Image (cartoon, rainbow, N blue to C red; front, side, top):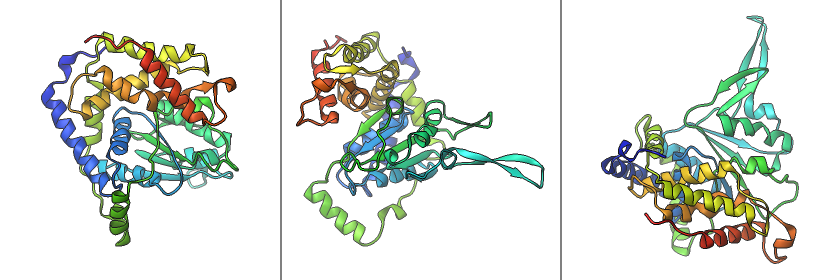
Amino acid sequence: MTDRSTLDARTAEEVRAAADRVVAAVSTVIDGKDDVIRSALAVMMAGGHLLIEDVPGVGKTMLAKALARATGGTISRIQFTPDLLPSDVTGVSVFDQAVARFEFKPGAVFANVVIGDEINRASPKTQAALLECMEEAQVTVDGASWPLPDPFMVVATQNPVDMEGTYVLPEAQRDRFMARISMGYPDEAAERAMLRSHDRGDPIDDLEAVLPPGGLAGLAEAARRVFVSPAVETYVLRIVGATRRHQEVRLGASPRASLQLLRAAKASALLDGRDFVLPDDVQALAGTVLAHRLVLRRTGVDARETQAAAAQRVVEQVVSATQVPLQ
């Protein structure tokens, strides 16, 4: 539990104003998707990683690039392909003849925001190269560990429709993503605005950081100081625990999921200008944080229902059946 006195309402309102500037800046590139942008920013503030699962062409990669630019972070992009090697991701030791010793050459993962395009197209061996990075924010090569930049966030994309030539993400890797979101198609007005703005060039070229140096780290620190009552903590634990007992679930949400749901709720509360978490914050994020972690029994999935939709439905059932605590 966090001491509420460590973050006052004035600071929370200042953070909200800064976050609103980031959302407004990214909205100049991603039209009509403020809710999606806020969700991605909440994950970044909470120190998590984001999985964007949607069809091609809806702006998954553009969202990640715009978010990194608006917050002043460094960006690295990895195009995941079947021939991608783990060393391409993490880096490799190369023998330097001039000094007669091995020198570490950092891989593409050394950036504040690492975009993993079509992550499920790389082999499981290459996917596994991200496990240590995402959990411990470091890379270990030849017995030596190298810290990754702070903050560090992986934004991975995958296409849920075209599954030919892909490898399903293992449970251990899905569990390291704090949240899974979908962009969805824009409405007609947003798509019309996109036609006009993108026709004159790429608007991301004009996007500049709206936070001062270290500003993102400040947002993340403020999110950690948001107050959580014992009642809300219990609410989180009961929701996560219920996923493990649901009759359609073979593997429920992990203890890591409990921690990440709480962290995401704290960041979401701060985005709304509050220095405390409400049960509403937990309810709003439960599906985004928990659904992709669940492994369902085959008998529990209707043939007409996708695995993702079934997992989302299970989380909604769990949330509706869990008693909301009195504040």
